[in-house]
Image (cartoon, rainbow, N blue to C red; front, side):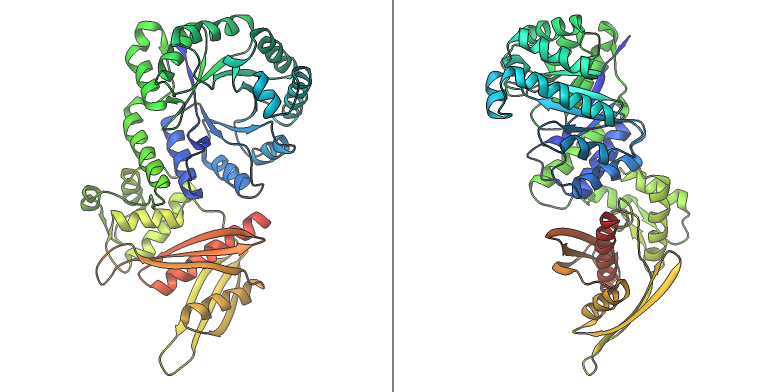
Length: 459
């Protein structure tokens, strides 16, 4: 039985507009589904993109994390830096090989491109054990030149090759023959990435597998083969044709549906932290429930948390549950605020607020850093302003407040409030989220969450 390697490219979609938290959740779901490779785009922002890769690396243990490189001057070094903590890491050198692509994308003649491929792959191999070479528009390249480029990449250290029908030029049988000829001639695994432009991507991919290809790039949405459709083809037809995959088929449709929900909301700029009315009726927890019961409810919402995040979520659950019954909406908000976060440099110990219509608002904030507690007492134009100033005094720095929003997560007199704070540092925005039945407490947690993200990157 031949196992087909599935490399998912959902997080490389150019039309995604995903938030940081949405990218993390998509990666979690792909790991849970057991895709073999989770692909991430080239590092565009050395801070946010590196942080994303490192965060994904903290919980992805079974899938390979693959980061693109090749076009930018420092892209290989950035990819290697981002992947330094990944258990299974790979760098993808993605370069066009058609005459038009080489000329207008890379500004290189064919012979110069061969030298560039050799240079890039060797540099990547020095920094990462696994290197993949991707010919982005292989079907438009001159076939003899394509073989030269592939051989150059292999000689330089590439241990995987991918050929792409970027322009959707070939019918499935012709593309399968094309990919099969390459797979027959070279000694390393060959993968394909097929364009969905003509609706034939899955047919191209599965026929290519029959001709010797062993890796297929898929996505949830986007412009390549559908993860759900391609995995279903292997599930339904694999026994007859000698194919299998590592995908958890019992989870396939549910997880793809959840990722689709995230991608659809990402396009519409709506928050993806939500659950259905049916789910809301099922979850009902209070402070008497143990961690096992809470984690079972979290799993029912579709989250697969690490042990560290589970502890954080349960601690936050106990804080909220001491004041009210926790349903699925509350639990979803707790997961969003407590899990999927960077390590906290500062932790909130306590806060005391004094406010009224005849006194100036004051805040007494106590934070903990490395086991040491520090107090800050300040006046301000309202309780939230005083709280933020007190936190600034403790950390010894003031960051520009770019945006501050408060909204209700649930309804009723004991409604949970969600606060979002956006701080600007060196021209870059950092968003923090906090939840509480006390909106001032939610605001303090959101402000501190954003500060911790800044300090984590600076550290």
